[in-house]
Image 1 (cartoon, rainbow, N blue to C red):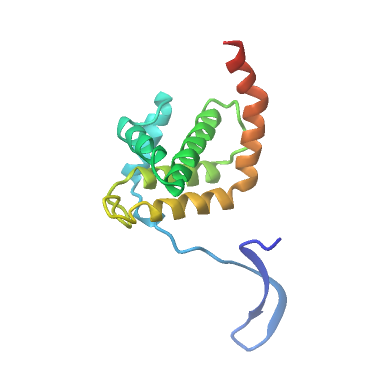
Image 2: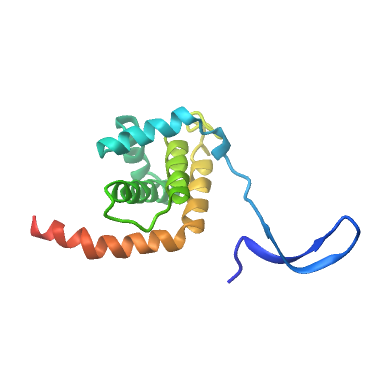
Length: 160
């Protein structure tokens, strides 16, 4: 399987090549538009154990939309659940860089006036792009979280 990290030939300034050099290919994205304040808003809500009211309302609207909108809604909720479990130290597989990435993606999805303002007909396509990129990049972590949740959280729900 090909990853974003590819083995390539590296061209030195003197014209020599070295096989096996590693480069990282980055996707152009919109996360640079997320401010420290945006992230702090999601982090504060996480500390309270619930989504901000405006974000919850946005996700509810997305949940009733197109398949792409529902993808953003469901994965945003999954990201938040993972962050909540990591905060409570019950799910420990997420490192700080992974958690920060998920916080930034959630902060981006929460913004209405982002790369493509949400009031436009294609306004959620950028949100979908960021969620899809995070889901792809963090696929093994998300899978591990889903397995963990089925083993630890779902049985408790049935006992309640």
